[in-house]
Length: 437
Image (spheres, helix red, strand yellow):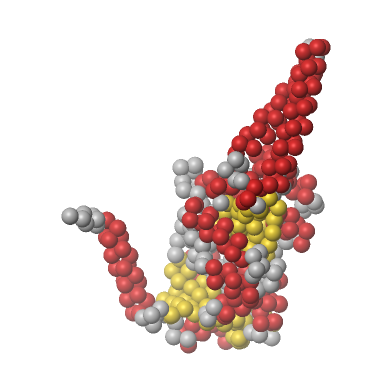
């Protein structure tokens, strides 16, 4: 095989159409490496470049570069979840990295960051390693040899590298899909459907409803969410399929009416069965009475549970989640359930509804995205991991972030400054509060 060098390749800026044609079909595609997201970032004033690398006129690599500069003039060039290329070809990787290094240096960047959208090592639903399936640990060493510093394998909340993903390949219909979930999850899905929880995609006109539920859930659960303007810009600059700001809702008066009617019907059935059992002593009817009485008790509890929600509440938004649909997958970016309405299983409804959407549209994966607490029940986030696990899937750990210093002295100075700032913040949190006189 003839060795490839940077001189054998052509580095060029791509048109939007050229980039999207390559990125959309690439096996490593990600919404972070998409034209929709590039348009969104441009609208927010970010510096974005769409680059391509050609060999003999054919695109063999591409990616979206973002340039960010601090107030002190420190510039970072980042290719999040990229670049998109064949990482099994070490000569190609070497040559593309050299071209990226040159481009970032031309733009006066102090560091180059990449984070290939590749698994570090294959794992199963419990997080156990399966290197016989896929093992990219040698790639980490290879990139290290090219001048990159690996940033570790811990959970990264900015450029997410621990996920839970369910493959949809081979699943024919909704029944087969739901049978791939746990009993507890199936029960929650069916309960929400029976109770009339319905889904709605937010628009510019209904964004306040979505954001109100998202921000409330974030404040209650402690997760970080974006400002309202972020989601408004997404709606204005990306397609309705790419950005799905989804809400789970419940019509309180209709729900109360439905439960009341079901309670009345089952109570009447229970009374008839009770009379029959007293008259005939039938064991069959006694068993049936027990089932019906359980339903009566359940409906009575349900009515009691919603006593705090008067009919004047009307239609309530019980959960809100930001989804992205792109390439091969549907991604659950961020969101949650409003604590007051947790009884209605809103998040379960949203996950299930978007899985059905993925199945209908032919997406190959459903990505629950950021996942932690995998190692044990005492870890933070373990409950969320178990919730996702109920839908079926596997833990996916990516290779993580890599940083290449381009201006070593500036890079080291910035690193020291950040460390000092971090130490100062830590010290402030430990200082005793001054008591008032």
